[in-house]
Structure formats: C-alpha cells, structure tokens
Image (cartoon, rainbow, N blue to C red; front, side, top):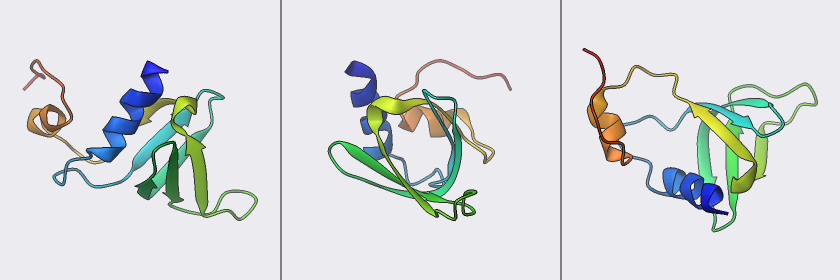
Length: 91
C-alpha cells in the first residue's frame, strides 16, 4: 500500500523542470514508454510514444502495479531534489 502512495505522489507532484516522459516498468516486467500522463486518486493514464502491438496509444494502470520508472532526459541533482530525493550525485 505504501508503495502505491509513493508512486502516486511522484506523478501528482511531478516537477515542471522535468519533461513528463519516461519508461515505466510494471510488476509484470512490462516496459511502457510514455510521453505524457494524467492522474486520479487511484489510476495513472499514460500516453504511449507509439502504439503497442495491439494499436493502443493509452494505458491506464493502478499505482500498485508500478515497479520502476526510468527518466530518458538528461537530469541534474536539482531535478531529483524537487522529487524529494536527498544526497549528492557524481559530477
């Protein structure tokens, strides 16, 4: 339960300094590249970069099925600090 709340907050408080795109991985090890998203209290709507093999351009997921997310744009420590991360990255 706590994991889904953390993912929900990540998407709800997405900083303006980070483009709203990346690659999301589900607990079933499905990789979903996305170029935009919308949120509700319990669901995440991802806009895919390209349609999947069935032609779908949008995916709706529950936060609890999210395993990881990859950022595809070059980012700096300041960007991650806006997401709540603390510490220091290499130079």
